[in-house]
Length: 278
Image (cartoon, rainbow, N blue to C red; front, side, top):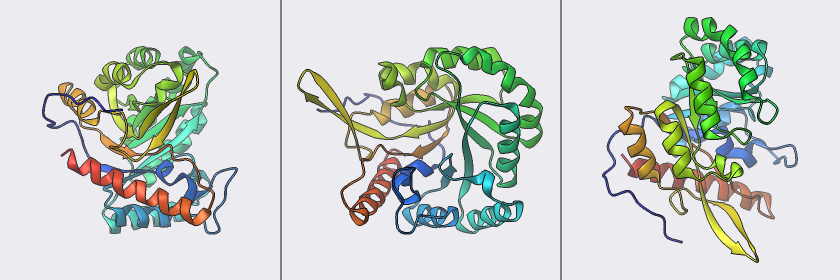
């Protein structure tokens, strides 16, 4: 299936190019799969820098809260020596958790904290009472809270919520494909959330007809249906130039070595494709 391309040229709309820790889902390990030698946070920084990343977003599959202050300072030093900017990500549902991760972000020199709100489906309005008490912390530490359109809320619900908070330190982490789970395509997701985006997650998919239904499967960035040029142009129209964080929906293969090699290949292909958009 051929992807649709925007007619306008790509200018602006993109900040640093990098990887999120979910681009290395299998190399880090999951609840159901542990490689013989899982990547450490330092390994992840080294791997990302070698692949040409400019920024790394350490999300909830990297247990930053388990690290000591000295370990966090060492990690920040490693990133600085590699020339990498760092961002932090977590799942949260309490002000105390937000405060903890805002402090972790500040210790790592991160200016952005991506959050997946761990709330019951459809209960987004209750999160205002969780976020408003931490606004002084965000302002004091210079951290932007970027709420991801994960699988629980529609893009419109999230946009309305961000505008209700009405604070420059609370924005959107825009993932064009996540809202497929709510039967909302990437075009609508981008149109609704681009004006509020402080961070962007990018991955790609292919769609295949199976029987009476459709199967959505991950693929290397640039080989699927996501129109990244249209995304960049939409961000530029709203004077947005967030960092682009590469992720993937890559299925595990039947062999560990093949899985990890394929994952690394997807990362390098994805970063190369993002560089081509500049």
